[in-house]
Length: 238
Image (cartoon, rainbow, N blue to C red; front, top):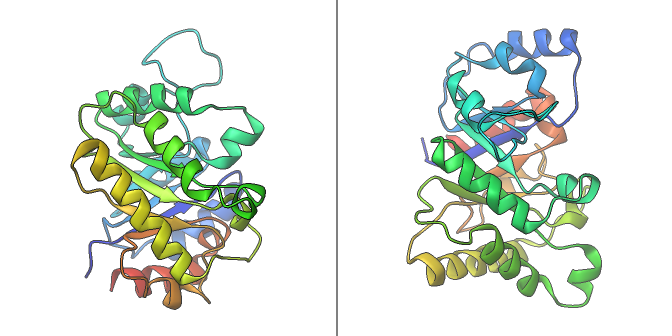
């Protein structure tokens, strides 16, 4: 077994029937290095299993009149231990800024939740050779004023790769992850896990997993099909 992390982001997929069928397939999964992040209304279905459960998003306050939101305090109280923050879809569709993500990270860490912070560049930014500038800005802004990053994991997700079946080369991923770790070290003198996300699937996982400095994967669409996800888990954690 390795200590690499495999995170499933179901996004807004699956209805009750799909979830029940998935749970039958995943019933024997006994691996704390796997984190399942279902749609929030299905959290109770996945809790108290032999894997970790995460949220796809939280709000920055513990309690209050914030209709439709879930707080870090509430999440932790029911057994959630991870939360995905800063995903490009949250940034794009809900206009979340680095500064807002920073506030949510602080709220999560205060409530003992482990944060999976997503960062990544657009196709235009990549073409203009701005990738490292964008990544550094996101890291510095999102992690601003943190006293400790012990419970923070970063997921490098090139926005142009998400859901497109196009991935950077292994060399490009390795270079980006090295850069991310170097920036974090400059800021905190601490080591951090960095995952790769963006069109990860059962066909390319063996190649992606061979990258020297990758500490795991954030998996989108392929994670909603357990037969595919099982192959990914096996390749990464065993």
